[in-house]
Image (cartoon, rainbow, N blue to C red; front, side, top):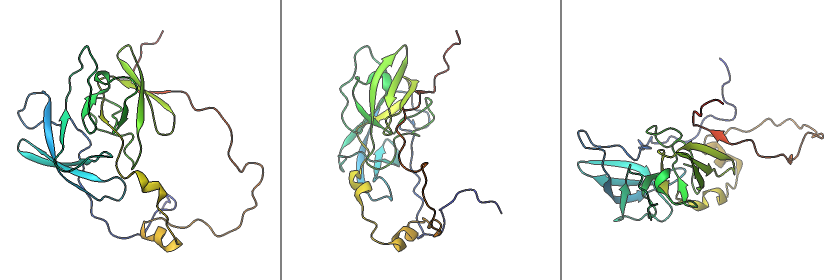
Length: 212
C-alpha cells in the first residue's frame, strides 16, 4: 500500500461522537428565525468538551465553550441588524452581527457549511474588522482570514483550556493516543534546523471578490 499519513496508527478504541458543527440547523418545517436551546449536560471528549443541548423536538451535541454549564440557555440567530448585538458566551451569530474585538470560535468558511476553524480545545479567534460585507478574523495561529459576514461563529473560547498543558509522561501514553514514534536514527542537524523568523503568510480570503 501507500503511506498516506505518517505517525498515526494503533491507539485505544474510541467512541465516535456525532457532533453538529452547524449551529443554525433548523428543525424540519421551521422558519429561519432565531431560536434558543438549553444546555442539558457538558461531558468529556478527547479534545474539547462537548455539550448536549435541546430545543424544540430534538437534542444534539455541540462543542462546549469555556464557561458553559448545564442549565444555560444559548441563542442561535441568523439576523444581522444595524447595531451590533451584545452576545453572551455560547451564542451563535453571523460575524456581521457581532461587535469588533469579540472572541469567537467554531467559525465557518462559507455560509451554511458548518464550523471548520477554531474548534480545538482552548482556542479562540478575534473579529478584527468588517469591510464591505466581509469580516477579517485572526485565527489562533495569528494568521488573518477573510470570510463573508454571513458566516456564523460561536461567541467565546473553546472549552478544556488546559488541554495543551497535559503532561504525557511516557512514550507509551502517546501510543494509547494513536501516535506512532518517529525514526530512531540519529540525524545531525545542519543550518536548516531551528526556527526561521519569517513574516506571516498573506490573508487567506474565502470571498470571491471581483477582479479589477
